Image (cartoon, rainbow, N blue to C red; front, side):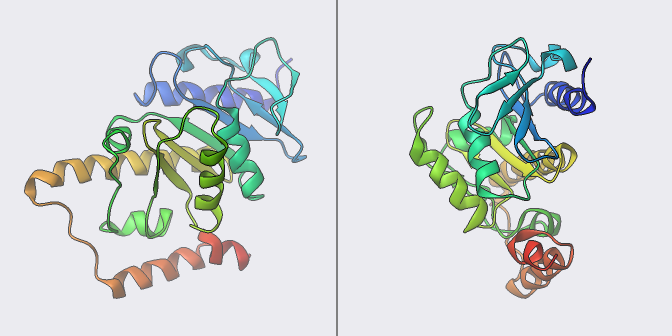
Length: 223
């Protein structure tokens, strides 16, 4: 018998494929259990198009498989870094949406804050982390710093797509959607001279709205 959490992870895995953000065996989804000790995760070597609830495995944060008929994916360390860094993180998505991933491949960033919705939902910037080999401790540390000291909820990984976190899978998904939408706008604006940053005073007000919404480090602290 499958659990609602397993069905939810499977549903969002399929949404990643339906959105065109993963190919082959790319991408993964994970959800922290309500007890905080277990996580539900998509299996390795499986198209997200084909994941169903029975494929979702249960692991601890260190990556030990507690139940399930499949193996855990190799990049669990990225998800673990997010869960360990932020107790408020209930879900992690890792995918390769084309425009955002292209910026990371080119070692570019999303640049200056130019869209109000981006500032409120994701903060003043979405960082691009330097390329690191698979299972690199330095990348895990950089990701953790970005989520805490850098106050990020979404991160571009040079050469490895996008990671988003959220209180739940829906929030993590919406953040992935917004990152890709904004990345596409950045790419479209490039031939026109690039995006124009919002005035600093406007950014300050938007960050205040972000805090009031309970988002970001200041918003989490005020809950």
